[in-house]
Length: 231
Image (tube, rainbow, N blue to C red):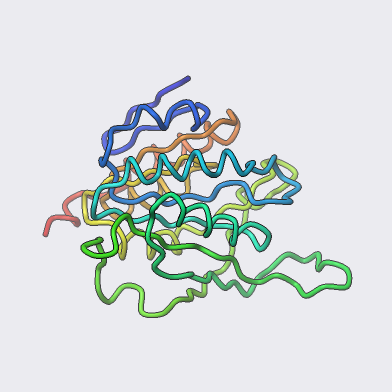
């Protein structure tokens, strides 16, 4: 395991299944994560047992006011929904991310995908954190990232756009709160946390993704003027 400590962030090169048990009970305000989708060609999918394991850890580490926002694919969203409910988390809404710039390679004899699902759960039925006026509908229109983060030949990932993550963080996590991403990838969630005055714990198992995440979060943490978050 490798740990990188920043002022408002802790980044770990590790397997999240090894590290999650060491995170303190009821210490996290928001889990915002994008685990490997089922039937993806970019990385191995999680087994059902692995999904059940992380779901129990999610429930344990979330504060009583905490939220979970989990991106999932067309093939696994119902599995995640079932597992997260069985773990005792409370379903709130399905949030749809719509993008107008999908892949240039449409699937044969199928409709081009131009949206993804994010499942919103809270730890409790009531008294969960929610900031009024940030998310007014269950869908968000935001283009997919471009540049190096979209070069599959180099990184083989499907990152989420930082402006989308900022919207999600701002409605579901208090200012100064702690955000956990156990499938960090290249660190987009961490960048969004630095931009919005939240603290961050990120875990990534692949070194090439981890190194880029460290670079991005470090750069953003140096650029942020923390005085803008004083209420």
